[in-house]
Length: 613
Ligand code: BG6
Image (cartoon, rainbow, N blue to C red):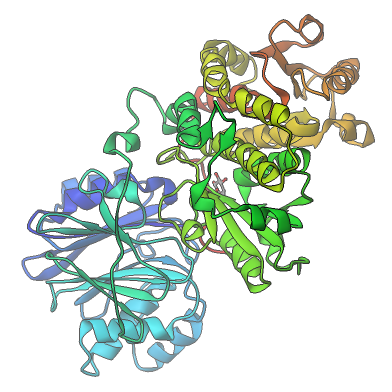
């Protein structure tokens, strides 16, 4: 996905847009650009590479003015280059556009426009949009009419922001389907538009989120919303509970390191207002779950992508164990096409940090199409996955900027644990004693996380010993099997090491062939019901000369006697142990990548959330 920022008001748009793009660079960072109306003419500056290249260009040839629109790109059509970077100017130089998504019918539209003599200067689908708008303007339509006509012609999920020199008093923004959101921000005599809240948080917390197939006309005084067909829509304004500091790195070298260390607080926040420790009751008001619904649920499908999928794998185990409801975990991109068996008593629970991942949203729509109850666990306030669900749980961790997800992994583990208790409680299948014990364990988690994170220096030492590895095998069992997958994903995402994870019991059926002195094995062996089994897996790996890095519970001398390195964690209730066992693996991957001098927050080829299929 890409990042978009727009500004209209009395101030110079350039610095406002640049700062906003900096806060969105996690969305895509292979090229960037901005356009500003300067002395009645649209001036464009854009370059391939990081935002810093654009800043350099603007120092050499500055532009001052307003309104303005800007973009940071994650390429889909056309390689990262100056020609393909956004914004794209029309032939008349009057209209300029930035875009997120894919114009699925751009080839035929391009041929039609070419047949009329339009000259294309890039390989992008985006350029089709600006030429179409100019085409309709030349037929006498106003900017908004030409824009709406164009938006009705293009196919696919798209977010578009454009402006024109001939109508400088407005910016047009549109959302067509699930290609990431567009949020409009209200200032004092000025207005903002952005792909995500962190870009405008320093200016305002008063926002509205465009729904799909809506167009916003934004002026200095405010905004009018209409459908593509021109029907007026009443804006739904809301206030964002996040503070601007949340979008800052603070004293940390990277957002990822900051977000890893925020987990003691984010885990406290995800419990906030939801747990009555004295009565051992869970409250999840936005889920709209009552006893009648809880009792008729016959199946739960958890669906998600990337790191969120591994959180779902833990959730499956927790919901089946505590609430005894059959639960499956399905990767979003598979679930949407596999014709799952669903009826009105089925729940589809989507997990998504951004709430804008196209495959996860499509899986939700597949569930909707088949009559399921749709729930979501989401971090991004006002995102699509939060708005289209029948009920949701907000992760309440604040903005997550590092592309590799960390605090938005541990929060949904706790959210699913709370959900499982609430379901069992409402179904009347949980006795008081067990419920009190399960709820009491929640109180321990923020402190256990803090204690584990305070051992960062020990993890960094182990990272130094692994800084030159090429491959790595992660092993786990039971409730910590998904943590092996998440640990391996973190190492892949940010240090580009070929890391593979396996259910440890499967090792002897194949991957054990990989083990030798060059294949480090990260083994999750906390004191949980699968501990003895993991000890024998570690012995098998050691017997083949493998170098073992074990995640083990304080005082576990047996594991310490076998392993080459131990990443210690405090004693933790087993059903919540994944929240703690993952922390040293997040730190390990972080430090290996940092020691290698890699761009931890913006790893190559990745984006914070992928809004295209
Ligand atoms: C990827 C991100 O693009 O999407 C991962 O790089 C993330 O970090 C995955 O886990 C799913 O994103 P989300 O926002 O749906 O949880």
